[in-house]
Image (tube, rainbow, N blue to C red; front, side, top):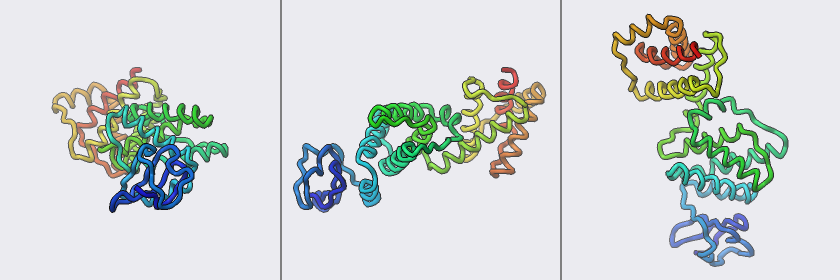
Length: 272
């Protein structure tokens, strides 16, 4: 393999037969010039991506250590999730991480308003995000806020093979947050983030949205549904308001039977 472009000391563009690749490894580009042969033992990772040009541009614009950190986080995530992430994660997460570090150095911290929901809905990914923050602190002595663990979790979740689109994931998580806020306002209670009833509620609401998108909803026995509606009238009335807001604001129409399940979760919040 011969070098066609030096990106930095640890990344070069090479030709391998008829294919162009990005070779990454400690010192792989150090004191090298175009057309030099790359020593195979120095290559730690080879990228053959549809987005090679974007990755090249990114590597030319960010500090080398930011890319190294992102790759270490990606490797950790793939190991702990036991899955290979979409190749776009090498661009998306690296770009986000580098920008977050730059902002932090300037004293700019972005609040992640979906932090409580992400912490519960994507627990494994959030734990990886927390590990990433500790890793960044150890390597760069930069203390990123916990909000960044949630941002990292979203990137990792949506880069899983069936993780989905980032914008759709954020949209659904935002809708769940709004539904919980409506319940809190109607009941006049503060929904505690660490409470198990809260965790059960938002997990159920997330799957409710997923089922509504795929036209696969829970079905309650009609007799059981009527019993729930009669026994928990206040919780059911709250569920109706949530469903109406969901339809009016987001155009998502929940079947009546689904309100029975939501009612049970709301009743738990009322009791505890």
